[in-house]
Length: 145
Image (cartoon, rainbow, N blue to C red; front, side):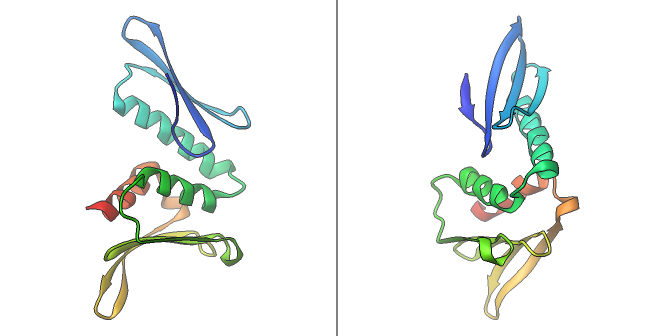
């Protein structure tokens, strides 16, 4: 099975023995994140998380990667507004109804905000060094809750 998993990476799952699978994610430069385990969704998510960590360390355009990954994860949900701004240090936002995810490219902060009568209020701020695949996905999921 071959399918896109995260922007710039391809996932491949091979059964290497009965019930044991090798999950390999490969980026366009040939770097790999691999796990050998049963091919549960959890195993695949852990392998994607490993690729996410590699991307965080080596990406030349981390901000655009996060933006593209967010859009891909949200799929066809009702996004009201989305914008990537290369001139503003790669800052971006994705807005749905009364919630939005903002990436401050200058400070490398991922910010989850909700709309109140007074405007937008910061609910969560995650600095780049604290950003892991799990809390990144949690913030994306909050947009759809």
